[in-house]
Image (cartoon, rainbow, N blue to C red; front, side, top):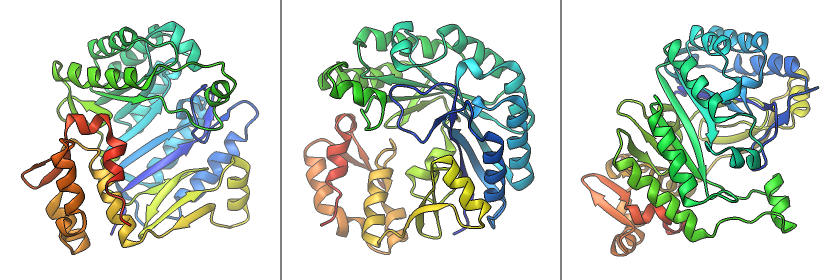
Length: 373
């Protein structure tokens, strides 16, 4: 199978958020230029240069200064021909007109902004550096240079966040001239500031029921907007679904470049070395910068097909599964599917098995039913 998608990881941030467990480092005093050298070197060893999607994430890619940012963009353009979606993650306060104009000039056509909330008190708790005014200014800058697709991220189930707080953030996001919205419930991850605060009794989270109510309100509110839900956590106007993220949900292969990045090539899932210096040193010594690699068994691939595919509103395509694994879906998962349909958590429509609204609220319970013994 030819790989036609790539993810690039920029692990630097101007500030470390209290909830984030991604591979990231405070940018001050980091070997950013050496990192870019290494990243560019890693990109150039791949065989296929014709890509349909490219996603640059982090960390925060817009934490790079204008010279570093142009160097990265130039290298991407020289190494790959991107025929489709070219996405870039950004913080609202870093998306200056100069930077967004540069992104546009080098072919970026989709920007994903980490907004999380419009409420100042919650932004402070999350350790975010932007204000609500920065959000409006960033969207305005992106529109001025005619970025084709603009996405915002929102979070819910946050400390001190009420249902009204979340409702207000959704309404404000939908009032802005954007094309896509992603929304995720807070998960307390080890090694984050939030996790340490929680263990010491310094952090109080809303109860699980409130988190479920927030998610249910989100789905209901979207129904009365110009957006459609197309995945558990993703909503878009027509023609603005994330093509790159569908690569993950359809369990297709992709390159992963950079410290801590993951990829899936030739049936092998791999994760690159981190921290940054380990990644740089491996490449300097002409070694592959890989920390782990694993070839999933057919059984594991079938499980992944269900976990990932069921995230999408359309669900898992039965015919596609049958062809991919040369075995009927019903033979492998028929019992689980029947059980979940009976409970009102799954539904069968045409050639698809999909989650119901109730199923989405308790998605993990649905996914667990597809673990093969």
